[in-house]
Image 1 (tube, rainbow, N blue to C red):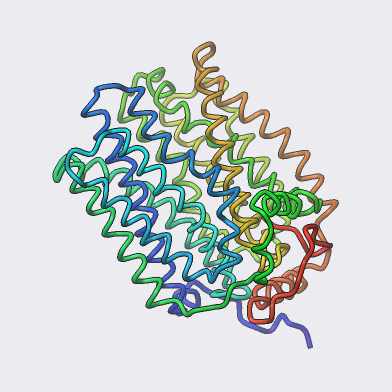
Image 2: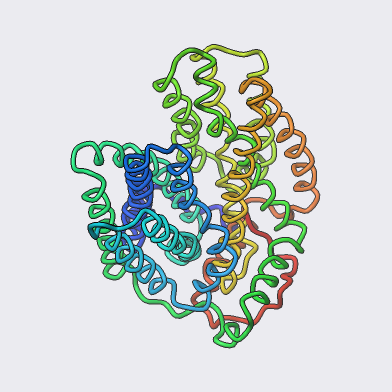
Length: 439
């Protein structure tokens, strides 16, 4: 008797899980709140100083903490109960944002408070990513990730747009108060909607120094060939998001101004948001695994078309198509979870996320500098070409290190990976064996 008999999971099955509904809605509030605070504070700084440089520095303060948080804090969600970690992060961010509202707060203090508040974001994100397989075991996990990623894009857009609108109608300080309220509501949802679980890692894991734990985390992610390949495939996002970094000069070259800039930015995420749920629902686990490499190649190769300097409509089609091919990230995420032990999952997610954020920041800087010398269209095309070559190499590598076994084996591995949290945690060394790969 084979395991082909069970009915495939559906989005209805995912939303039928009460814990997932609480996690999902609390994430909407947290992400939208993050964006709202960042936009509101940036506008507040610019309104006070009229300095684009200081406004940009305020905006950067919302990203820099990912480096510290991803490296040194993410493993706290392995050594502490993940529900408690998420609640603590929300409460801490609510308190820090509330302090920003106090009258007469100096600009330096505002930026420092934003920096401190954002420091909790990678820890919260790692805890949420790590607890999702416990809440959605088996085939439901991939569908849950698709819902989460689509929600993430939507919440980021809503938070950014809402931040600007809120500042216009109610002012920056009232917008920050609204942001603090979103974190309080998120903490309540997590506390009331998600059941308590013990910490995934053994207590003695916390006896190591932060540097030793960071070193072991990098060994976990980058020593195993399959896990390293999946992580690098996920990091290809730094190439195919280059249009975001040069959206303003690209639109200016087309003569479409701020409206065109907004359309370019929207097109870089719209394709993923639309096609990820479809890809998850209709592509089987084995198909998603096999398509991961080719889709990664296409998401970068599509951008090479901009070398011909297309108009606005054609550019939006190109960027949307590239984003649509980016649904391969869901397959990478699922493969990542299959190969990371539960007691190291938060730290691994934190390192991978930190790499994406830092890589994007550096790539955006490089793209902006290059756009001073050559056209933004050429910058995007060159970045897409480099990404295509890297994706081809990684795809060939993935086919060599990807374990065989087909759909049924993939389902068995996912069930095993997501059920580990129900068992007493086992001790793992810094280097995980054949099962240790992650996306």
